[in-house]
Image 1 (cartoon, rainbow, N blue to C red):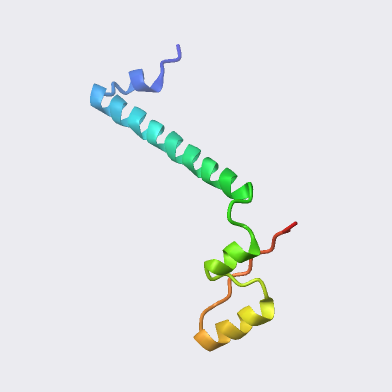
Image 2 (image 1 turned 60 degrees about the vertical axis):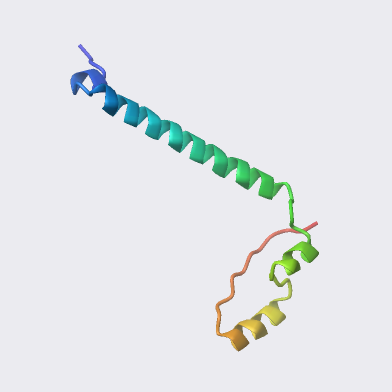
Length: 82
């Protein structure tokens, strides 16, 4: 006979509540992550002017020169901008 895990180990009510709360929190966090990614994919703030306002460069040579001057690494993002 197959017995569910929570019955086999005799979890207390507080342990069951904590596990349920953890699963709920994880589900909420994953949902927030997907909503954030979806809104970013819709093109919010992706214009070159908007990116430049936040310090992003779209010219590789300019970025290389600035990285050399500041001693900071370059983060390259390859994407198709219509």
